Amino acid sequence: MKRTPLKRKTPLRAKTPLQKKRAKPRRKAKRDTVPSLRRKLDRVFSEYIRRRDANHSLSGAAKCCSCYRPFHWTIMDAGHYIKRGKAATRYDERNVHAQCHWCNRFQDGAMPGYTLFLIRRYGPDIIETLYEKSTQEHKWRVTELRAQVAEYKAKLTELDAAT
Ligand SMILES: [Zn+2]
Image (tube, rainbow, N blue to C red; front, side, top):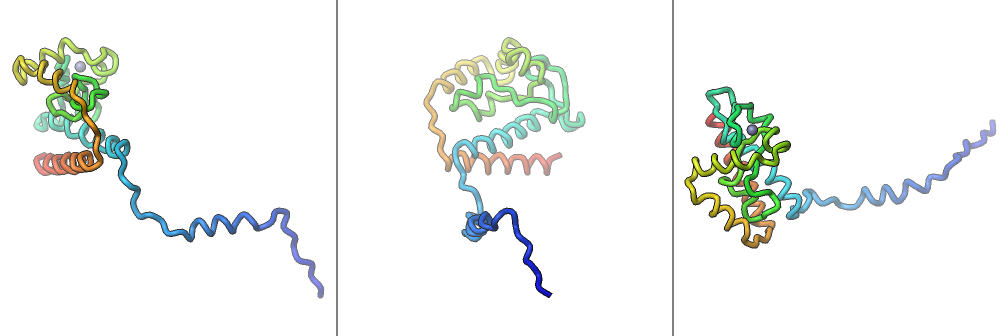
């Protein structure tokens, strides 16, 4: 019996270029860039700061650096005293502390309380020290950021062991 072949409405052409693309060898890992590393560092640094400030005998609660109200570290922010836009102080541990959402997001950082907290913790020179540092030029480098990501991952592992 003679059979008539089924006719395709659309030609098969589209498959060829796709297959060619797949056949290309893929790069195994994406190359690190300054923005991608900064995003990674933001994440590990923020977790480190909030866990550093949490009191683990109080089931992981941290006191807000501006209003002193306690919240679990997972629902707090890592609040910057000098804003994140200043590169030189963005990852300075003295410039970032566990802060509640209310102070960080709705009170613009609740600066009077934050200033008092810093002076009490580090002494009166801290404001000037951080300010001076924040005015310095800072060029982001892939090698430096990669090292910092590794450093904070290690610090998180240490916290894991301690808690
Ligand atoms: Zn607060």
